[in-house]
Image (cartoon, rainbow, N blue to C red; front, top):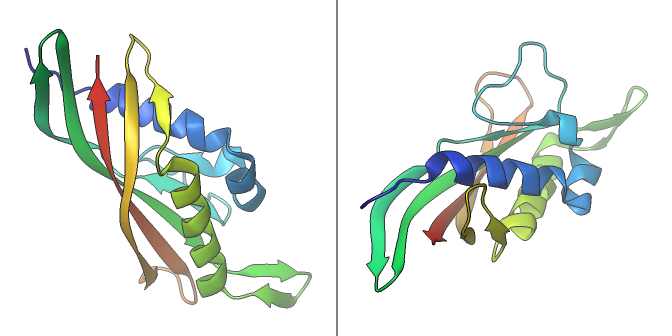
Length: 147
């Protein structure tokens, strides 16, 4: 029987990112969100895309799924007082690198049993169209769940 497992995958990834010290050094755990970002959120922040199941994985005594997901990081740069000490582009790039390092190759246990394995598949660094001077990193992953 096919099972998506996208919901527990999303939850497990969020918990994993919030517990990754190098990532949390750049973006506080309280600023790492699921798909909904609260109004008036402070920058920088991370938002999870919607995990999509793209197929079943079946075998003898095995049932699973695989899919794709993107993680989005946002920065307006780092300041000390009024002085810009790191551009938004550079800061978003470092956030993207930290997301990739935190998740690529990770094997994360899921509620209900089994583990999800994540593989980084690429990224993109974009100027954010909604906030002047802001940058947006998109980190792409495949995920595979086996039980």
